Length: 343
Image 1 (tube, helix red, strand yellow):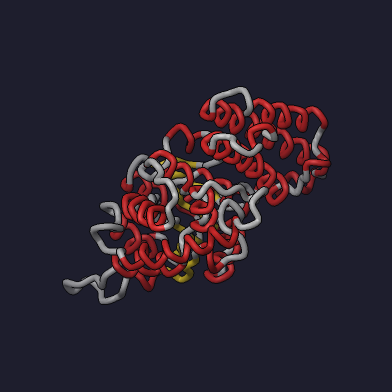
Image 2 (cartoon, helix red, strand yellow):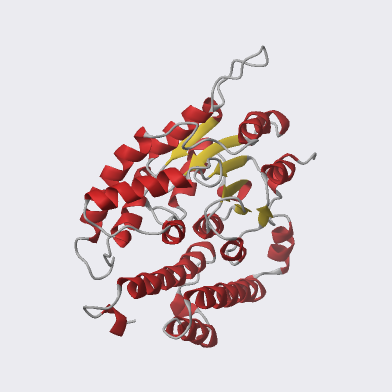
């Protein structure tokens, strides 16, 4: 890793290595936040395993490393959790734990949605706006694959990486990233329409009917884009229901809406989910979070929520199935059945 960081190293190599480092940090977030197990308290064998996997990134292709990394770290986390239960539970605590197991999606009191790739088919808008910003700043353009891979980051972080900057080495990473993000957000938000960021078929019906079928359920939205974009997409796609059915606006069903710029830390950190849960007055353990990115699953599990992965967004099925999602949906109809199952 250090060798590839030397001046003159190809930017693609640096980008791949930093992607792997982010994956390593994902596991730390889950372990520290969800299970309260800092690395220093993990068994030595498990730490050695994780360390070997990190070093292995220098010798394996990216896809191979990601596959191995997420498979084995998931196994480690499960082992840590089981070890804690066996070591610290009394008989009474064990009995109580049976009553505190994860809820099923249709039992949730709160449903929080990601937006891009989950509710809205907007990847082309994001990709085109990114290319415009990069071109205007004399930064080499990117391909679609790299764009999709980096949608797991917040906009300033993503654009700084596209500019070839290193968050650990380049002092201007934050300032350059924010400058590019400001340009991007103005363009991005201004281009929102039902053509560029329209809901996937069936989403409007899902949002409208969910509170009617699951009485009392509260709806929120959390994206790694700016909050202005979140409001623009939801307002554009959530017109009044007419025809005598109802005059209630679908947009008003979202009781909490947040972006990366209105929460302490963006996904994969759980801060945004905690904030949404607080505002809709539902505990994270009684919520489901629905998204199309591995970072959505990491954030949900770190918050203690049920994680539902949708397979129609920006990320490959292979990458999603290596993330800690609890459920997967191939289409909107499957998601409806999962959320609206009769009690």
